[in-house]
Length: 126
Image (cartoon, one colour):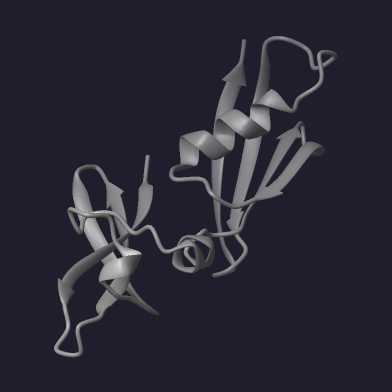
């Protein structure tokens, strides 16, 4: 399960901090540098968390989740603010109607709408 978090690394010469998106999966990190910068006021007192509301909003990735049973789409969500894939899947599965037969194999399609990237998952609904 991948987790995403907006972070800063170090202070630049101009006194600002570049904002990065940290992607963590299987205990490995990768960083994507963004075009956003924050100053000291945009960080928590310990300089570890971004508190600037503009940067927080901009770094929220828009996600579309779709659930399918036997090729038929049964649920769709579009939202931002998720920090990992399991949150998206849990939210999507919570929207399924009671009339979905149990057990059912659910195919899940998650798309990062900002980057136009799609990943497929599968869950067994008990």
